[in-house]
Length: 454
Image (tube, rainbow, N blue to C red):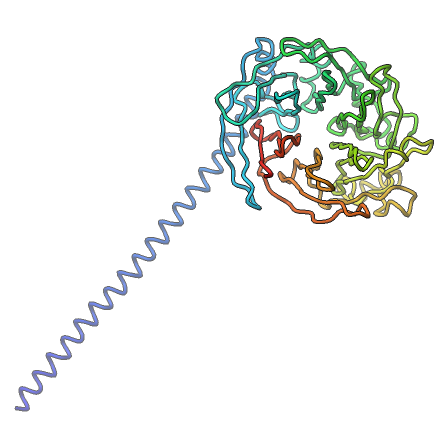
């Protein structure tokens, strides 16, 4: 009996050891499987990163190699007036917003910020949407709600005023804006008044869907030389160029200071100003000063004020409110640049910038130094662009650097409230509002974005 008991115990121990060995083997197998799965995931992630980096390198190499050719190709497309096809995609944004994106597949090849793809501007004539490239391709189509119809080009002579010679000098010499008003087309651009000396000018012509012949409207004799200037600094991205209508006889025009900062405080200079131009006789007057690089303008007729957006330096993008009645008085409203700003000179308060800060101190306060305070300063900068009104006391502005739109309201006390950011993932060069829809020119893909606000 004892012998049988011992045998039973030995069998039980053997079974336990076998089962334990099997469980241990299973545990090892599970751990190995987990490790293999983790390693596979890591490999997939590494492959994704590699492919992404490779794509970025290819894009950069493509820009470097294609960029110079892109300019010639865009001007060639303009010369032969070929149709511009579109491809439609849909992008989901935050706040339950959806953006339809219409990629311009040809004609918009050369950009302002980077060589490829192209930059552009939007406006409307009757029921047609008009798009203008930064190099003079002008095209139209009816309502943009599908990708079946192409844009049709409108022949024009824009390149008689700014052409291949100027474009080849640098990207930042370009067309700046388009306004269609009273059946006329106004276009701003950086004009080379004499060799390497620049200002921001306007041409205009009668609206025509076949051919528009432009002529000069506003072309100051004053210019900023790209090398021979007071501060030995120059940047044609700081040239302003926005145009809006004020009434049947006047338009409002913004100018930058081309990084000759002192011009913004010189009442005898047109640079760094908002200018009211009589389109009947070409007379003009300065209605505000102390601006660095105004990139957005909106005239709120109901409230009789102007909203202006402008690029700051290293930080300090601004939204400014300009009372139209006060601006037409003898004293010109002054918005402080380059004496006051929430931003800093590029490089900050370093030893190398000592003289720069002595000349242009950039005080954080505006009102303490006799200037108008901005409604808001953005620090860091967002690369602020156009501004539009979407409802009573409700507005939207775009951004280049931040690749977003910002919704906000103005209180009865004219204070900015309820600021909401919505990322759209591309640089927004231009922004328009029509039929409860936002129209955006998206610079990273040379596209027109449409956001329904219903």
